[in-house]
Image (cartoon, rainbow, N blue to C red; front, side, top):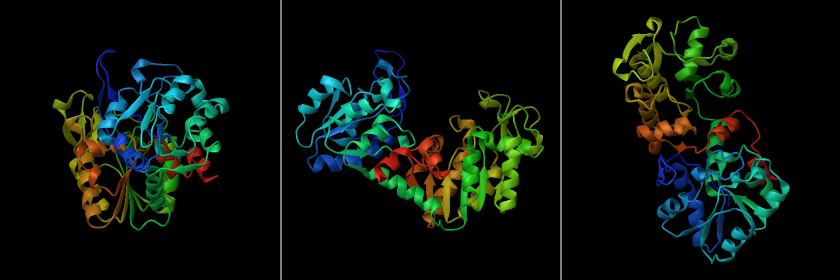
Amino acid sequence: MREDLNVPILRQAQDEAVRILDYARIDAALPTLRWLRENGARTIVLSHLGRPDGKPDARLSLRPIAPALSERLGAAVAFCDDCIGPPAQQAVARLGDGDLLLLENVRFHPEEERNDPAFAGDLAGLGDLYVNDAFATAHRAHASTEGVAHLLPNAAGLLMEAELAAMARLVDRPAKPFVCAIGGAKVKDKVDLLDRLAQLVDAFCIGGGMANTMLSADGVDVGVSLRDDDLGPARKIRTSLRERGVAVELPIDAVVAPAIDAGAQAHIVPIDAVDGEMILDIGPKTGHAYARTIEAARTIVFNGPMGVYERPAFRNGTRAVGHAIVRATEAGAVSVIGGGDAAAAAHMLGFASKATFVSTGGGATLEYLEGKTLPGVAALES
């Protein structure tokens, strides 16, 4: 069973207990794991944690995840210090019907990310059936996400099914109007996404560093705000959106400060009066305008915060957009929260549970919406 238990953790010292900062991905895995347990399967869970670069790293061990998973599942979860070889084989042999076993981080082996056939074979040799429930890693052609699927009878898990159904609602005849509230650091990283969504959506509400770059491309002085150095991609996408008749809403006011750590000095200015400071959130007038557009929508995708939501002084813009998404959803709209920072912001600010669906994917969500093939999904389909 491939799950994505790559959760944010806090470990200040190597011998200190790990604190899990966000249980969203663990909780998302529970329905499939619970179903398998209740139906008597002996379930062997594969996952990764972080980027250990193909070698063991105690700071990225999945060992602390086992008791957390056990607590949320309400059932014992055994742990093995490796994912292949005699230790894994012996741990699997001890399983009884309905038991669960979490194996150590598959990325402790360099063969995982290389999708090495022999390594995939070693993983496949532990089981009879393969289930991929890790949508968030489906854009990676790794041994545990793609290779094993070709070696065993396979299926999608309940989370994978739900993720794909939610994504399909966005790209397969979505109800109109369709609005995308999008943030993030750089336009150049999301050119393909913007270009693809431009074929589907009626309006973009743009915040974050992306908005700063778009404003700069329109000749607005954004001071020392985060933005792309090369304005070419932003100008190109602006022209493309204009030609397609897609509305682009940009900030008309902003919350600015001398620096990201200067929350006490935050204040609101019109967008043409940034005056050498740093834009760190959309302003209240912008938030009101975006909310009005979102509340009129029938399909909504939220794909990035409007500002530095981690800091109290700069989260009101994202909160305003979130509240609008909730109101629209309550009125019957379909709302999907993209993974990554969008999901993290939605959980922190309390509107995730009131959206239609919150994706666990980051890169996988983006690549699906860009129209790219996800290797982990294609392997199941074949």
